[in-house]
Image (cartoon, rainbow over all chains, first blue to last red; front, top):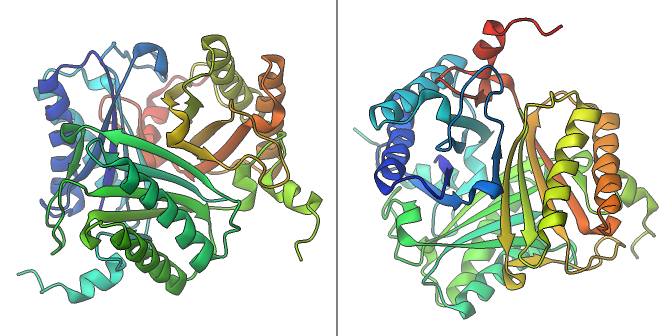
Length: 134
Length: 134
Length: 134
């Protein structure tokens, strides 16, 4: 249960928008053990005067395509997993012609009891009711 | 001091939108001890290609009306209160003709010192200055 | 690395919008040790029926210009710094003709490893690679 908020400049192309969203999800799958189907993303476009991102802090070089990825997910990922997540997302974004410094990522953590994915049950209870994955 | 962000599909009717916002607030009041007047909600509509919610994870059945409720509130609610909150919100939403699996909820916690509700004072100090409620 | 989300009524003037964003950033610089260049802000306008803010809780007086400032930043600021931050932001906002009760602020905390500011590196690693500031 990650929930990703992806904030992009309104000028970003549809292809790049889709590629970034895919990169974020695949990164979670490949580095953080998130199931492929566990995808929840909210994307928002911002006019340039509503998205104020310093162009160089700290020692980077952002363009007008700089985008912000916020991920809320379950506590418990290691520092190494987070490092791998950042690198994976940026590597995939670069394949879609993003500049590597145009991806800013921030993580916030909570726990199973802080999620309900449907039916008014907590994710803790939903997990108990699931068939064991093979 | 909960702050709720409610993300809805742009196709959702006004009646359902209002009903969901009311359900979220009443749930906090009835299950988590939030005062009735302590209501702070931000609602955002999303085009379907900007709101990517897997239709079945984990073993649920979401429709095009699937909505996301994020609540930031004070640490200290028990697991039982959170379970009751989820069930209350979904029960009220179902009364407004939502499908039970169309409500996804995520919680994030902070503390009194992390809020200022006006006048530049922390909520900790604002509480001290309030008349005791009867 | 604060990331500020500033939610304003769609009726707010451009001048006040800019003034509030500046107030938030300067507050972080002056009270929380944030570098001047470390500015990352996302601003969103809300129609009045999508921004539900109780007008008086708790014992304040909000107008139609009431705005919400959410700041995600690094854990470690003291209670005194947070109190100073709230007062600073509101004092600057009042200079721009906001009413003091129209600024609601909420903080959420994470750590260095929860940020990547570019290039796919964690902020922890980016900091190591930076020249020492004088």
